[in-house]
Length: 102
Image (cartoon, rainbow, N blue to C red; front, side, top):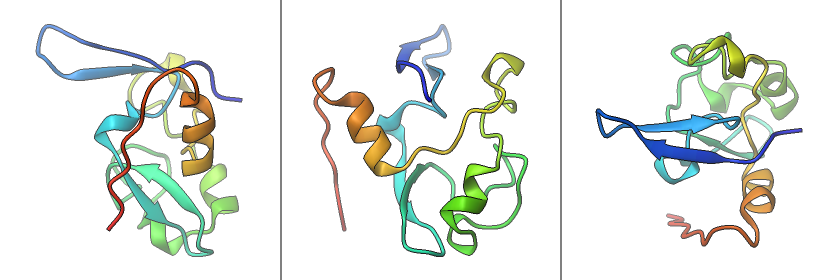
């Protein structure tokens, strides 16, 4: 289960994250091969997971097997790509969200 989302601006003014694969406000929703909606910045899995290819080429079950945190720091090992539902549930009552669906 994912832990609480905490993010801050560092000295370089980049957003850092804690216990969720990047701060949700900087990400986009993408559909998996089986039509599930996940939160990811990049369509490609290559840069920030131990997988390869595009999000849209994999099912949610396949994406759940990927480590989406170790690229950032070893303390984030085994972080998973969150679904839109999980992101909404995690943020419910804590922060306001604005979704831009196109």
